Length: 116
Image 1 (cartoon, rainbow, N blue to C red):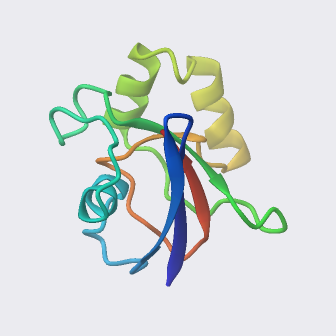
Image 2 (cartoon, rainbow, N blue to C red):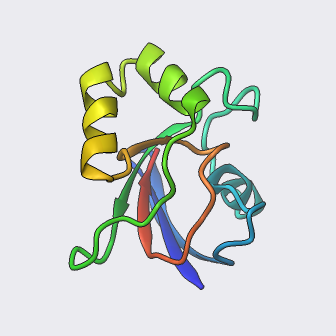
């Protein structure tokens, strides 16, 4: 069970539990179920309006979030959230990007902070 805290300067933080590894529970779906107002339009990873910053709450272990899809890389690059050099470095270091599309990121078994 993952603990996900949603944080925004406009709203009070909200922490929810998420079923990890369901392969259908995206951050956006979790946010909508819990009435967390993350902006979105297409829900298909095409527009980039649901870009969020994700960090691990437990600093002892690195983020386990899955790798970005090619579509996510392209949209985040177009939105100015991810440079080509950063995308290449993520592959070399085997680390996920802090920027994700909420409609594409599947919740894993890790406690995370989602800034929107």
